[in-house]
Length: 129
Image (cartoon, rainbow, N blue to C red):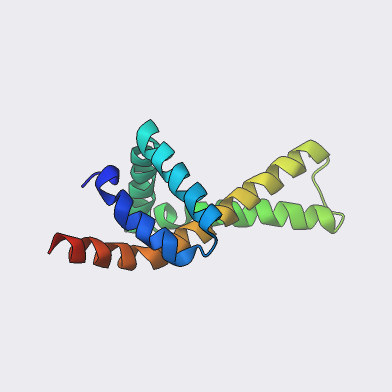
């Protein structure tokens, strides 16, 4: 099933979770742009890779992303507490912080998608009946 066939269903879900009509329209427009550019397929492929890592039997394959985020976070906290490697510049600390912010955003978005997926699947099933 392609993203284009899911657009009406996803649009209905967006209507339910976004109360502001202007924000709904903007979200739908961005979704259409993703579909037209083919970026949704790329995002789906990345999600499949992360899913495969999560389901791996290797502890390291499952945990390397959280370990990296904790490491970057620890470097930032150490800097705040006055401990830092002598070679780390302020610019490098800011880059680490950007990585941590991106990781947290990815986690929040991922959890949101996990919570919305059952609703989308139910909507698809009810439309296909």
